[in-house]
Length: 120
Image (cartoon, rainbow, N blue to C red; front, side):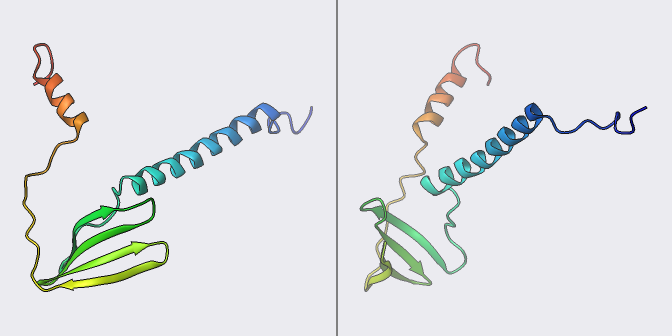
């Protein structure tokens, strides 16, 4: 009797399947990270006394942000060179709250849900 009959060595097919599965998992991690960065889903929006009130994207790596610190507002420039305080604002800007606009997909989904035969 062969002592190693119960233990099969890792075949080339099993190794290829393991390697492809590992690549898929790592690729999925990178894809989720890219989506979170691209759509700024992981960015903190307001912690205590500091919050980002509004921002304007000027280019792929350049933004202007209006930040609230306590009762003061500061206009910041963010680019490849780093973060630059452009100017503190003497009079705070009051933004008109038009309510949170639903993304087009959410509106379309609500529309489909209201149709007869859809879930309510």
